[in-house]
Structures are given as C-alpha cells and as structure tokens.
Image 1: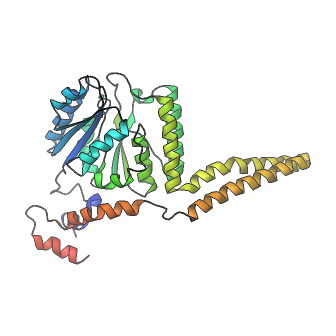
Image 2: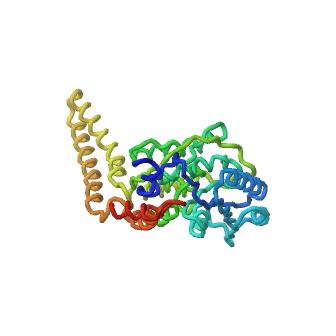
Image 3: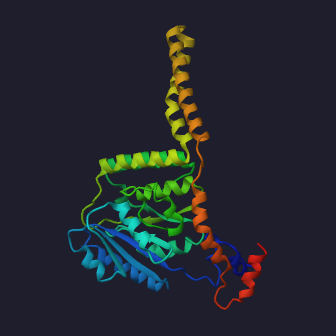
Length: 344
C-alpha cells in the first residue's frame, strides 16, 4: 500500500505530508491583542503574505481584549475578522473567544507584538497533519529575559516535565498550531489568563497526545509587556498543580512525600553513627509522615473516575476524523475510499 492510498485510510493526524498530492489545509490564525496598535498591522500583513505564498486558505482573526488605543482600527484594515471584548479579560480568555468563533478547525495562534516569526506558520501547519499540537520553541537573546522570568520558567518547566515524564523545550510559547475540536474539551481546565499556553501544553501531554516542537527565533517586542510576572506566575503555578491533580495526581504526592523520605533516610543514617534514640525517632516520624502522604496519593488515583480526559477528546474528534478518512481526494474514485472504509 503506497503513501497516496494509505492517506485515505489513516485519520487526520497521520496523513503523510510528503505525498505528491498533499494539499495544505485551511487555517484560522487567532491573534489576541491588547493595546498593540503599533505592531498589529505589521504582524497581520506578514502573516497574510506568507500564508498566501504557501497557498494556504487562511482566516486572520484578531480578538481585541478591551484595548484603549487604535488596535481595533489597525487590525480591521488587514484582518478578516475582528472581535472585541468590552473590557480586558486576559490572554487565555481572549484566545478561547477566538478559537470558539474560528471558521476553520485548524487553529494557529501568535502574538500581536511582533516577537514570533509568523513566516514559520506554513511549516507548522504542515506538521500539524501528523501531530496534535505543533509548538515553536523559542531561542535567542530576547527569550532569556530577567531573573524573575528565568526562575519562573525553570520551576514551571521542570515541574511539568516531572508530571508529563518527557522533555518540554518550551512550555509556554505563544506560537503554536492545533485543532479546535481537540482543545475545546479541555477548556474547563485550561487557564483563561496568562498561562493558557502552559496549561494547554501540559494537558495535551498528560492525556497522551502528540506535541512536536520546532526551534524558532524569538524577537524583540514592540511596545511594553502586559505580563505581571509575580501575580501571573503564582496563578500559573496554581493552575499547573490543578492540572496535574486532575490527570496524574500521584506525581504531586510523590513530590510532597520526597522530603519526608529524605529526612527519614538522613535521620536513620545519623542514628546509626550517633547511637542516639532521638535521631531514630525522628527517622521513624519522617518515614510515617511520608508514607501517609504517599498513601493519600494512591487513594487519589484509586478514587478517580477516569485517569485521563482523552476519551472526551477522542469522542469529540472521532466523527470528524472518520469523515476525513473516507472523503476521496480530488479526482479520486469514490468507491476506493468506500472500499477502505468497509475493510476497517
């Protein structure tokens, strides 16, 4: 069975992009904007140019999040769709508005401040035919930021890697491509604030979905940053912990129990050499406490009605994938697609 025939049978994430008959899918590019009047037009014009050159049918959508400058008028000059919030609701809520109202199922998101290379979108859109989510992993001097950002990024990344069990090059990049039908079932657990990207990455990984990263150059932004690092970092930490507790709670309890087991090992080691009952009692206390915490984690896992949420996603996405699998390509005999469907 060759690649051209097999792409009729496989569901959307496994279509072969190298097939000679591959056609780029339609996409909605959602750009949240809050007081980005200086940069938004240039970002939209660049996105329009690269997508047209790649032959991609694209809807450019800007969601203006209660801006007080000329962001809306600048966006209207180029974008296909401009939605406006009457007041500032936050980054994640703005993205959810755009994703819900999008014309196409395939969604790309980017920032309005010019920091992300939108010219990489065609490559990411093509890769999205094989993966549930494609993320631009940022590199360069402008990505590093100050010490507060570095510390927060380090904590969130390593906590998420520990929970997901795999390496995450960039957990909160704002340039990514995914499908509306696969992300919307997770909206109840994905942050409506600054941590939309962080929690969406984590939720996808915790639900056994395929996330692919490509390196991109992160550029200097135009205008001032709207992020409040301390406040938004605390909220992000809360939401990350909630997401882990929903999907893989034993990891959090292992993390909480580890200091007690380490304290028990150290106390017992000292007791062996000091020959003092105090250290032995301390070791036993630490050991008992760690065991109680770990037991609570086991209890949390055993009482969960469903460990993963992916069944909901697959239930939502499967009808679309099945229709795509039996729809013949242009100039393809309809009975060929029907035959593969009947063969299972």
